[in-house]
Length: 394
Image: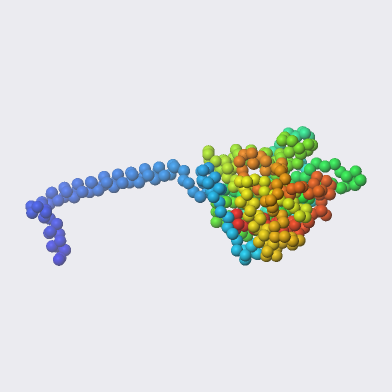
């Protein structure tokens, strides 16, 4: 059929009557008007929907309401690393770096407000800045009343991904106890090797050993990130009381409880974003007995037991005669006051890694490098490397 035939057919109505040119033009105008009105209405609906969506807050993986954060924390399932992964992670822990680079600069008097305190804080920050993962660092300073008057304390905070919905906190205290010099040797000072220079050095070594894996999960925007905390003012100035102790942890727990997370939230705080607080203290002596203190974190204590057994069987633990030596669930010698208490009272789950009974040299001048057992320190660091890798899915 030709084009002329198609045009002629269009000039006849379906009822058989002939349609005039004027009538056809009028109908075309009506159709055009109807189409314009429909188009305008459609555009108005689309614009209204767009404006409505723009004003409603979106829920992204990094912006979860409190109920979701709690649910995800309780349902969190760690990875189980393969034998090859365990071997690789254990080999990444460098005992020489731990001892020479991280620990020895910390073995000085470092009471709050002292030159030594400033020196070791700069050491910790320098070590973390040298890593490729890209930590967000903060010196959180505050003034508190003490039996010695008003004292300025400084917590050190390092967060891998501040925007992540949830956090695993790995913590210790960096201050040393105010201690009278040895009357027989006034140059001898309390350096608190196990209390808590060694835990600080272990955390620095864990950040160094896992640097590449931590960088990867940061770029992947994992829902759980790692935060390192080095508390100031754990020690009492005189006798341990609720007000003369735990200055740094009390301050930080209150601060996190007041800090919205994510930024601008009116319903959730940074404290609610904490999956678990893992606190290290008094580590460094040989043959530590570390027990489980809290039923609600027993499953995470079990992961430490499992890591110790696996590393023993693979031959990565030295001076370690039995497959389960450090972490035991068949003993309990009572609660311990430490930096976890302010967080525990606010509902944060806690894994407290402290030997009980305490080392025999606790709060004496003998708590120095010579009394530390290097194989044990390295073994515990390897066990924690496996724990972190599995919790964070490194």
